[in-house]
Image (cartoon, rainbow, N blue to C red; front, side, top):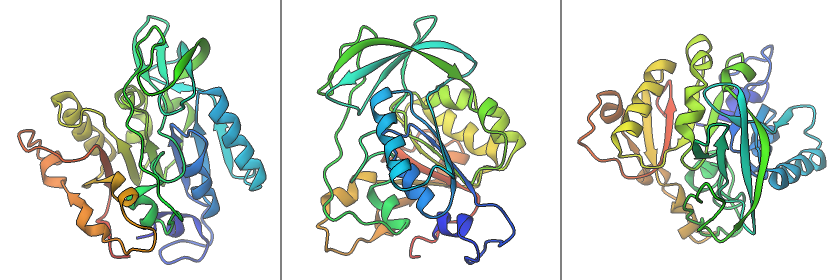
Amino acid sequence: MHILRRGCVPGAAGSSSKAPPGLVVDVGANVGYFSMLSASYGCRVTAFEPQHAPRLMATGSMLLNRFNDRVTILPYGLSAAAGSGTVHDQVGSWGLTPVTDASGAHGTQHATAAGGGGGGGGGWLGRLFGWRPAAAAAKERHVAGSSNGDSSNGGSSSGGRPIQLMPLSALVKEDVLLLKIDTEGYEAHVLAGAGELLTRHTVHNVVIEVKGYNDLPKREMLYKLATAAGLKYVYNYEEEYLARVPADEAVDVAAHVTDVSQVVLGRQHSKKLRHEDFWLTREPLNLGA
């Protein structure tokens, strides 16, 4: 099922020619792969990226593709409430960025590298949206850097830089076609500031990477996200699968996606989930489309 085409292309099956293009919210945009993919379908996009260098590259991609009429890229870190924080930009790697708020609480606000595997655009998700890279590179695995700027993901910190923290609900106040959250462990903080958006507006799809996905707090987070937003179906998928498949080989998407709706919505926490990537939606996914 092509969510972006149906929600953003005028005249597509299931869409209204009079309705404005759907809104995609890209939290952890990195260099903008998923944002540009969404914009290529005609979607309106609001993207968040607090790191300076990848945000500049995302802006360049937006201008080169002439998407500045539909894409907005914002420098905020997303949190439970408005405030100030510090982003520790990485030198040599943009896969992970430590973020601290004014109290020193530590998290990360960033998506993985764009291209073949990061930012929610690669893997089977990209195939489902009709995109196939010429050659898929294996997605890097990242470990959170410490609050003092150390990093174990191949990069080093450039030192703290002040950023503004904002709750998502204060910045997005309308229905959302697709909310993508890929923030390497900071997803609970993002959702803590998204309550009004999830309950007062219709969010049709949420694609989210959840670190520690079998930990009880994260399982409860998934349950509360689904119930607050009225999302009835939850799928668990292997994002890295496509990176292991030759470019000219057919991909059986359905074989690498598991319907875990009963497990998540039934709070069956003793049943283990298999992957860190989830798609929550209001209607069943047609994985053969």
